[in-house]
Amino acid sequence: MPTDKRFNIMNGCINLFLTILCLMVALPFVLVVVISLTSENSLVQNGYQFIPKEWSLEAYRITFAQPDLLIRGYLVTIMITVIGTVTSLLLTAMTAYPISRRDFRYNRPITFYIFFTMLFNGGLIPFYILMTQYLHLKNSLMALIIPALLSPFNIMIMKGFLDKIGKEIIESAKVDGAREIRIFFTIILPLSTPALATLGLFISFGYWNEWYNALLFIDNDRFVPLQLLLVRILTQIEFLANSPLAQVADKLAFANFPTMSVRMAMAILAGGPMLVIFPFFQKYFVKGITVGSLKG
Image (cartoon, rainbow, N blue to C red):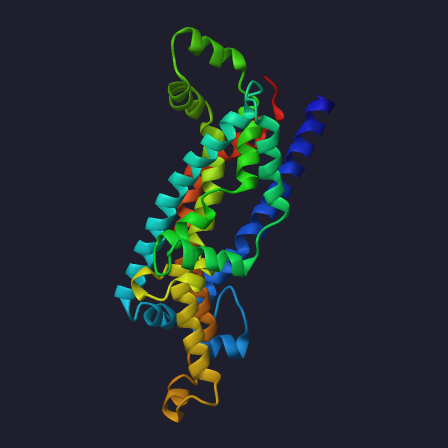
């Protein structure tokens, strides 16, 4: 009886701690949503509040002032995220599989070469010259997809997972007459679902938040992703509101512009879809993290 009581107290303390932790994680996001729905005057006078004095949808009205640009930015981002994630997962698995096989002759040299690229890179200028003058990917969606297709870190994670797959499964498939390509697609990939889902989540986040390569290589408005579009909108707004070179009429128009609430509205538009998708990958994400600690 005392043991049960002690267990209930400990269980209650753990639940209380986890509840507080969840609130600490959720409250900043709730505050972002509330700020995006708060008028600029209320923010200036009262600061950030969970229950503002004055509600307003002005930030979203301004953000959706040109819906065609926003929709096009979403479509570009969705396209590079889907194509990039699927292709990256396939290439990552195809690279990690042979170096996870101990019977592969060049296992160690290739593994060292991949690890070496984690420590050193060519730099920005050679990268820009390669993309624009040799690959001719200026103003192309491929400029947003190709640079992130293979990550040494992801390859090492995938290799660590594939090391756990018993060689008996592969040898049994070979005895049944299966070739390497069939073993890879019908046995290795299905068994690697937790690792693929975990890496897919990381890769998709990277592609969804892509703006730096777009800033370097994209000048055509047709190929501008959502993140870069929002950065350009916010930069233009702040320039018109603060620059001494702006016209007087523009400065008067933007004097009471809801700059802070627009920022928060853009943050919600940029990150909201990924927050919706994450719960569907959660079970694979947890399994992919814990499976690496299991043997056999």
